Image (cartoon, rainbow, N blue to C red; front, top):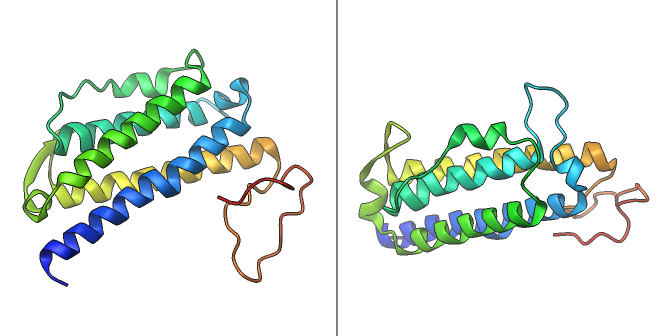
Length: 180
């Protein structure tokens, strides 16, 4: 595999992780939670699913759309965590979808030289490869937190995986839910 093929495969996997794997899980969680549950937090040191959705949209925009793509950076990171529930579910989902779609457009046009190039993002000097990897793993980390909060509040297995030999969910609430 040459450098160009390796670059394409890495960027394809990054796009798949964001758009096809994690985003649908977050959307499903936000759909399953009530508006009140979206903003629930167990304590002041923790974030709600809503805060995490805002945070992910901001992070993706800052690191990929602005950092690698050159769009203006208008992120207000503190507001992502300060929000307490005035943003409705549909707006959260749309904001996150748009951020991921815009990021995937940037990823689609990157080349090996862009991944090797040094960028200044959030006050840090990082390569395009590092920025892309950061966003994918950051997105995965917070997706897991949103899933955990949803499972806690809904008291059910969300059936996101269906591995061979794995027992089916036993919760009555989980029956009939699609495996994503």
